[in-house]
Image 1 (spheres, rainbow, N blue to C red):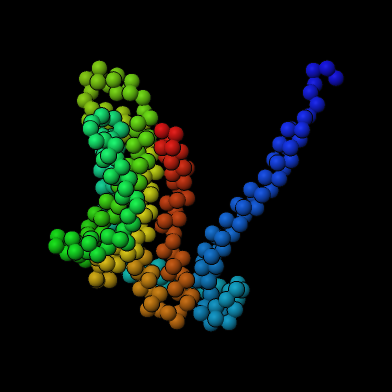
Image 2: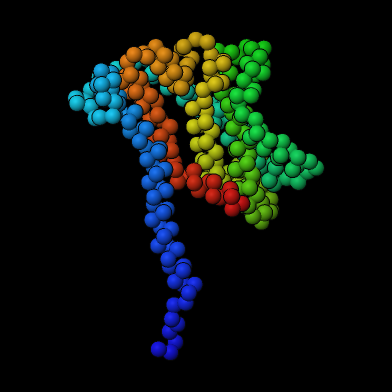
Length: 288
């Protein structure tokens, strides 16, 4: 019929590729989910078993679901003390990283001065040096400052190590905000600091939430730095408490599974409730 175009070779090939790629994509997603979720489910279910059951048949469901493993952990003061320590350190580290990182990103994105790109690259270079390489120098520095076996002795370095990724995300996000807004604010009598606090920060909220989540989870899961700084178990964070519990109750595998499973809940809850904000902030920073 006139006006209708018969499907060409390109359209046929494109249709075949679509039908081939969609099942392949789902297969990859299923494989990634299996690799991620199966160990977690095995850990959670194992906490409802007894150690003899795990030793006799570790790959089967519990014959009788035992709730006392989780109950004993939830009633333990050691578990809640570790959560409190981790929360204090993570909140302080996140607050410092977001506050200092946002002010530094504001200066590096909205001000023009000699050496600006060099300062930015200096911050980004911090991504190349993990905390493991600085453990010994940090311990000696904290020892001189009297911050060993102190919660702030862990929170301050963790905030410093979160600054590079914070600035890396916030700078392009703030840079993408039109300069006309700043000009209009200046005409209305606003200073640059007021523009930063009243206009730039609210508009950068998705990126701020993203860097806050990253800093919080990174601090929450930190292991080496608390291990180096803390000596008394009353200051142990949750990762240290898990390691100590595993070494203490080596023979009680079911309770170790229960303790480890419960230790994952806070970080997983943060990711579940804030995943949209996290993705939105990263996408906005990339577009910027």
